[in-house]
Length: 132
Image (cartoon, rainbow, N blue to C red; front, side, top):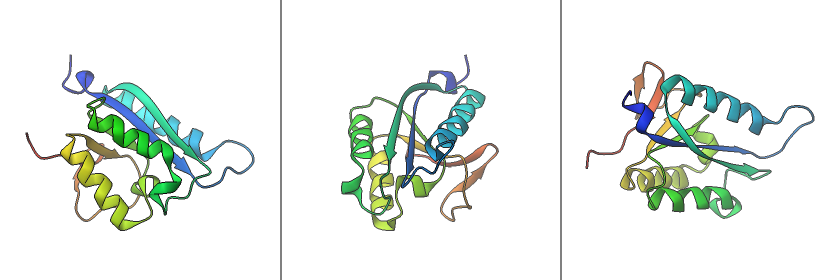
């Protein structure tokens, strides 16, 4: 069993609007599930905020539930397509990343532009919490 196989992961996907055809949420989920399978992570949940703006935390009830689950220790890894899925507000994003780090949750972003405060990884970029 690899180190990752024992790590519980959840996916967070968000879109502001769903155009006709395949949903951007569905595309995010497919990509995150493929990444989890490739990394040997155990998926234990999926969180979706549909037709929700990324600008205000109050507009995303599912993200609030995810953060509460993280605080309770329900998972160790959060997968998301891009940091903009978590928030388009830099202060909210920083607060969410801090809270997740304090809850010992690693945030794995599978796509998007390089982030200056993250170290590149062979299979993506990770925000890793401090060692306990």
